[in-house]
Image 1 (tube, helix red, strand yellow):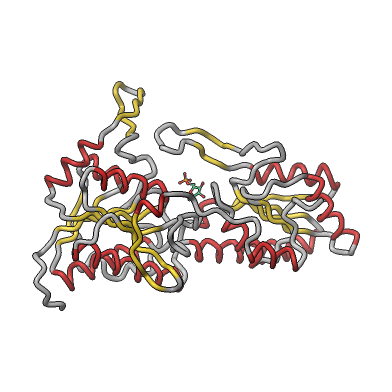
Image 2 (cartoon, protein in one colour):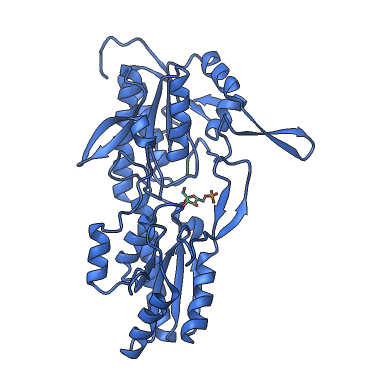
Length: 370
Ligand code: F6P
């Protein structure tokens, strides 16, 4: 017990956007630090900003946050449809209108007597956090996303777990691909950044990796697959990010959901890549869409440790009065960075990134070779 003279605080805590492994580790770390070191009360807000708008919360107890370190998902629930400035309101049966409900969120913050609000989330959550900062709310951010596309932090928790899932899936696909002499296409998550496809693909020895950041041609993909077949390797593994763009530049969008600030639901490029490869090379091709398997389940040891370190730091910020900041990992140190810095731009894969060069050196194609 730290016996400093801080007045007891009421800290709000929410998890926003898509879930990812490690969220419960952050909840545990924020709550335990705030409660044990500062005697603070921690108010868990349910389903992200949705709960903040709708007034759903509960006080967290030591018992509730104990034993959840290894648990996937989030005990608070989350939502990617809860942006208070873009909130879906049913104005008549079946009729949804997008409204600014930020005044409701502000009302609840005051009503609940929150001295600070810790928001754990990705790019969307940090944009909302920044807007609340502008209205005088004392925000602290914690970065999360399996996509690893948040600027201002070297890595986000959830990413390592997602990559491990991709690696294991590729190892499994490898054996069946080689037995049947097939091309196996695996579609992985990554809306605007290809970190999962790149890192997962390299970890599984993928022959072709297709990323949102690198335009590809079908000819280069066929060439790689055919070249392997002529060298006696009648199978290939192709790892494609959901956000990779088809030759010509189009994204493959599965659906649009106006309830979300970013309405696009991506998905389907794997099928298109498989169809084209089979037609262009004559090789039997199958596709696996890894989907939400990458987001669910237990976090890796790395993600548990990172989430814990970030959560502890965020609690210190919230309880000591350091606001408008996001906890971040830089050079293996946890530091505070302005939330504004985190949302200034997305952290995409630089086409000359060392890992891309390493992958090319071991023969991986990015579909852009001429
Ligand atoms: O932002 C993380 C992410 O995993 C993206 O890669 C993907 O497009 C999105 O979540 C899918 O989210 P949901 O299925 O929850 O809409």
